Image 1 (cartoon, one colour):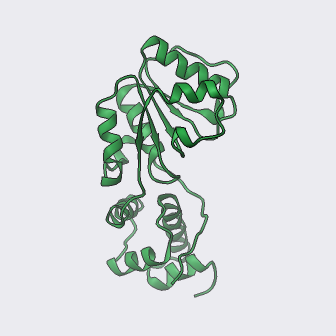
Image 2 (spheres, rainbow, N blue to C red):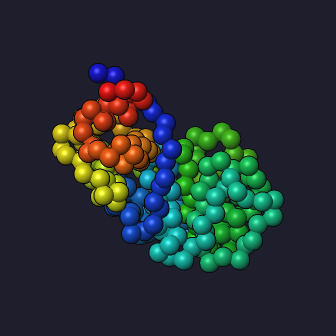
Length: 212
């Protein structure tokens, strides 16, 4: 059976308390423990880069910034930097931030959907500075990790998912963290609106977007 690719709204919980140090993020966690000047954490959307970056920032007191929200002039008064590099528009501002960290000996951790060496959208000055940082990949979660994540998300929402329902869901959805979390949100909303338990017929209704 072919997998369905769905795009439901996603409400992410990025608190450090909700972060799960599963196997697919272990190499990045080890790299964070041995930080020298800085680190680029890269991987596909939905594998946990933002959650890991925000958790590190919360635990270390680093300033968290999104490249997509940067202005032409940036404040360089921060102890450490956590920078989400995706969606960037002010590349000169990103360069100023990374260059400041390197010249002043401040630790910075950057997240990116692609490995820096493979990004063709970066200006040469910014790319050269980012390549000076250590690089760590986050792989797609294994199915066992996805099951743990689904259990966690369901518990957060006080949802009762039976093992049969969970396997039914995993067999019919793309193995993508963001998509699965979005589906769970939609399942929760539908179950509450219809005042019914989460069963296979309800999951099928949500996935197909129509009647059972």
